[in-house]
Image 1 (tube, rainbow, N blue to C red):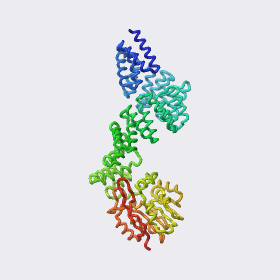
Image 2: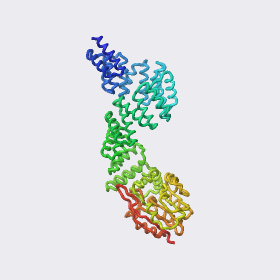
Image 3: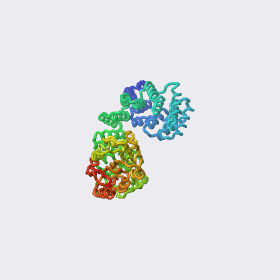
Image 4: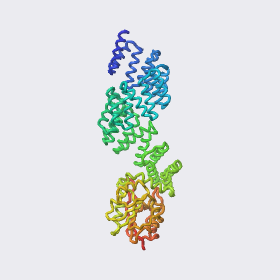
Length: 592
């Protein structure tokens, strides 16, 4: 019986080493049936389970082997490796500690220290391994990883290059490929990973091959590498996630959706898979499904900020402003940084305020807390003032500057989206006369240049946003551009203009009267001032952060400051899915 078991196990180990795990398992179970509790049979079944990713089964089998044969170091060290793979690092360490003269045990201890970000302890462990077994490749690799952990990729690559000089080692080549990829040395990275794959086709190498190919723009090769990684390791969720990411970039949303779902089949709680799948569903306007997956992420990872942010965006867009506001402030509390986050908060609080009296109370409470925790944030301060109906003039200029700085790259697109035609309409109302000198206040990206059909000798642009002026300068049409606040510019400028424009500017000025008085001296005798103003039943700072004016107040102010109205037209300044901004267009001239 014993001889037969020995033969079965010898054949099983040969099959395992040849990669024929199915045959190895069948032979080993046959041997175990003939001799229950046979140590090598339990050990080999544990190895097979480990190879298949069945870590719990591997642990149980190796525990049995260790209990029956505590004197066999191989069983204990392999059990430690499985525990390490399960993340049970301290338990694994207790087994490695039993073998202070084993270089591989020290190497594994070094790896655990690295996982714990204890780099100095890791380096000591790898050095100890090298004193026991000089030039041990695993220990040299560990020291290279210590170098990388402290940002010394130069020393890491030197170690790895020296190691590969004697005999190419796949893991060393893989690390070299990572170092070169991060440094942007694509040719060297590709050469290193291709050599590693020629020596051993392993999942980490294929994943690195995919990343390198992606960075080089070779998406087909990247997809092939990720797909092969998924074939080799059925539990490899990241391979499917990376495929999905490529498909999403290519706008092949159905393929991306399938890939993320395959990832979730392997790892049902994977946050990246749920999050990216939710993104795909969101872009297909499948909002309930997207919400389900964002919530699935947060159920297991409540502080996963990308999902918190995207969930808040959907809730805001679907009108659940109270919960959206709560999520946005959760992100702020965790110091999350996302494009336009402050503006989303401001818009959400404004929408919440406009819902009902309960919404007003909650919006004011949120805004007050925002200012309390971020007292130097002008967006928070101005929003809080707007919701309270009391202007904070010290924050207004910074608020306006930040607003237009942030949205400068997409400003023209946003204006089209909200159907803003104020400038086009106002230019059509101008009297038919020559406008040799023009002052464009709040000139923005220079849209005036693209719309004005007449000629001019001088065109001056003024805007509080330097980012907007960057785009205006690209028109090559402005004589000069000034990064100034409008009233301040008017007080210091000494020129007179045939036409002064102020479209979508009045709402960001604290005093329309002061503006008109500063502007009047800057007009020529026949010069005209054309502007838009957003209107409301009562004049004052509105919850949306802009100053609105009752039409009768605009008429009175114009009269009191010496202007005659040439044209006065009601209009819709902006229109989106939720609101329409009522306004007036004016063309006026001084009555002198």
